Length: 114
Image (cartoon, rainbow, N blue to C red; front, side):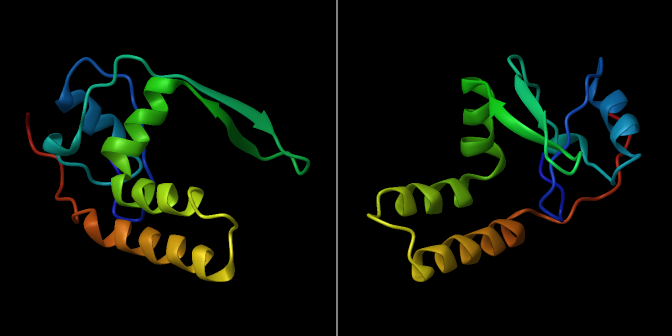
C-alpha cells in the first residue's frame, strides 16, 4: 500500500490487475502490495489557503493506517502520546520513526499481469 516515498493511494477496481493499471498513473505498484479494503471512510476539509486535507477517518480506516500501512510510525506515536508533553526529544523520536517507516517500505517493482 505505501509507496516508496511514504505516500499511500487508494483505488476502486474489480481486480488487482485493474488496480495496478489505474495506480500506474501515480507510481509503479506490485499486485502483492495491494490490499482489499471493505470499510473505508475519510472526511476532508478546506484549509484557509484552499488546500484539501483529511479532517477525520472512520475507525476501520484509522486501524488500516495504524496496523497495516504505517505500523512503525503508529507505535512511535503511541509512545509519544503516553509521554506527559511533546518535548523536542519526543518530536525528534517521531521524525526518526517516520524515516524508519520509509526505509521499511520496500522498493516496488512494476506491476505484472495478475
